[in-house]
Amino acid sequence: MEDRITEAIREKLADAADLRFPQLTRREANGGTVAGKARAVIGMRRAGKTSFLYQCLAGRLAAGVDRERLVYFNFEDERLAGIEATDLGTLLDLYYRAHPTLRRAETVTWCLDEIQVVTGWEAFVRRILDAENVEVFLSGSSARMLSREVATSMRGRAMETVITPFSFREFSAARGVSLPATHLSAATKSHLQSLFDDYVAVGGFPEATAMPTERERVELLQGYVETVLFRDVAERHSVSNLVALRAFARQLLRNAATLVSVSKLYADFRSRGIGVSKETLLRYLEYFEDAFLLFTIPLATPSERRRQVNPRKCYLVDHGLSHAFSPAAGLDRGHLIENIVACELHRDSRDLAYVKTARGGEVDFLATRFDGSQTLYQVSANLTNAATFDREVQPLIDAADEFPEARRLLLSEPPLPRGRSMPAGIEFMPVWHWLNTCQ
Image (cartoon, rainbow, N blue to C red; front, side, top):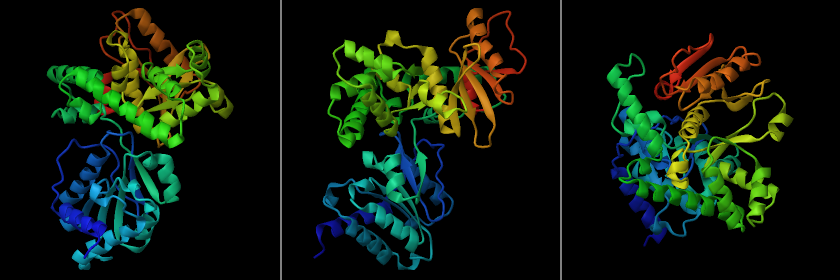
């Protein structure tokens, strides 16, 4: 008689053969593979990693790959309790026993979800990459499937795809809207603006966008953060000072798109009786970044020392988290929009930083693309006030001295103030239009 694990594997393979890949919102992430390397699909919990695996399989099926060569296998199953690395060989043997003509003759795509529950899974994946004709996708929600762990355990044998909450284009697609990137009619512009207002209010976590009420959405997002704090940070790093951990997280979540001064936060916590050192707060910030809860960007400078000593700007993985942890009356639309732009640039930039000009002004972003081209971005929620317009434009003018080859772009919500025009060399684009085209 077969043992329990072998029987469960056989049943799950049969289920996988009958699985109909769900039709979900298409993600814009890289779903390709490189010979000899696995594709590690990582990112914050509930951002849509499993859905992306389905998308990769469905795309191959649509391209003509035989269905039996597309295998989705989820290891988070009570029937597999106690599974060990040696059982993974059984998974392979049972599959090829059912499809003997495929072995080493045809490429088989394996999507191994929640594989981190199997201790020692890395050696199995490396072995099949070397010995079999396969492409392998890996994913999981545990802290053990975060980028640092994947890079270490796979020893250079994995390429990463980071899945983030919906971009504005993906959000629009999830709402069933497909909008042109050019030649926008008045009606299309109005539709874009309306969608953008919804996006600013709701955020991009797929499940949260479907919540019928704000209360349910807030509770859902708060639950996401609690899970990250306790499972991906506290348990993973043996953090015992949970009071300081949660207080620090709440402070960052409520203050998106701002400079992080650990010294000031340390002094504030000390005055409130929260005992924690500056060094510990710096470690917590690193833990939050590792768990994809947020990311930080440095000052744009060729000096590594200046990058290290100057404060970094903090952005949330999704602006919806700011809604979930801030009083509605305290939300700053400008910061929310800046966070949205930061996430878009973070997805598609080789390097991202902020700029301090010689006159003391600040440009929100200097984005360096993979082709080496650079763009300076200034982001504002509203430019109808002439003084605000001048304050936002002047740093872009000044930054040209240090970055003469960089394109300069001002993103905001129209209209511009009466009597003001864009200075030479600076372009203006409605932020919702830029997000739809990402020029």
